[in-house]
Length: 491
Image 1 (cartoon, helix red, strand yellow):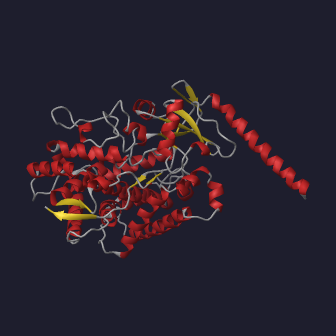
Image 2 (cartoon, rainbow, N blue to C red):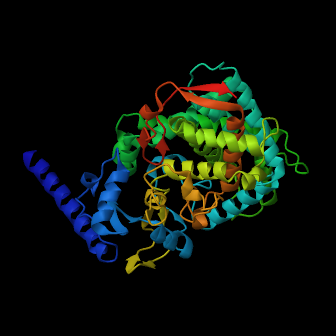
Image 3 (cartoon, rainbow, N blue to C red):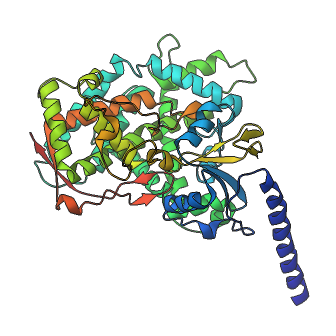
């Protein structure tokens, strides 16, 4: 028995070494990076709780393009605006693949829009964009829905009577209702128990996605799959969301009229009907559930988290909030509902919103990409399928693009005349072929909600502004703001 155990141990060691040296042989094609260890990869070079700091340290040593091993999987990290733009925009087709994200793939299995690849991704994305446009994305019709939902949020905030409260849930409900009106054809009451549960599941999963457990799961999925821990709650939450969406799809199927499509689900059902004789079709019941889930999750969490950060930042910098108040009062007044067209006349407010998105850097490491074929890039050869990390923090904090990136300063988006100034290094929605398909909707939502709230309220903290910490509580796939309470004071 002793000999057998020793033999097994030696076989495992030799196998690990062979895999290590075989993988290391490919490094001549890949950019340089820290030397990986068998099985562990570069785990010891990375701080799971502060990946941004770890990657910045490696950038100082290896330059703007380097390779790290997430376990046994090589990932090429792209740093700085010029490098990221060259990859995602200038060579967009080659870098348009979706990289590995085991913590999400376990649930999606590559279905839906977020993690699909190849022709399936292109077809589903094209369909989703066209359908969202048909239902008003970027148009006046959807703006009216956003304005109405912003008014609903105002009424809810008025009921707090100036008492301190945590705004997380209310903000999440508001943004979720906007995407619900497009996807499901209707909004929910803020007291609807099922709706509140769904918003809670989305908030919980965004927090869990960015926990150390989820990061370790992405490194060692097979190992973590067998271990107990909070990461398993992610999949339980996803299943509950999927069950809800299945119920909505079933209800739509029972009342479906091909001559009157009411929302995104109806449009998908019509597409399934049209292509039912096509064996190569990508439109199936499972796909509609996963695609709807992708839209529902992304359409709720990203913009709601941004607004939560925004309130926190305004409380820390009351002088900036005061200037936004002044501009809104002068241009829009106190009665008229803000419109997306008001951006042209409110350059300071527009600059503040952009600076909030740059500063909070909500997806600091970017969503993983992959190269779709063997790709020559800056003197290296990246084999087909190589994971790519567009390190967006290094773009939003690039000193060659922003004068003082570590400081929150709306002047980053203003010219000498005080006019709004675009900056191509602004990439909160990523860039290139994998640009967030809901960007137009998210930008409209953010402006209308932000201006509506600032038109009606002043945000007061429960502690001195200088004590407010605007750094994220968790930073993994995205950045999660620290919990806080706010007093909403009518103007």
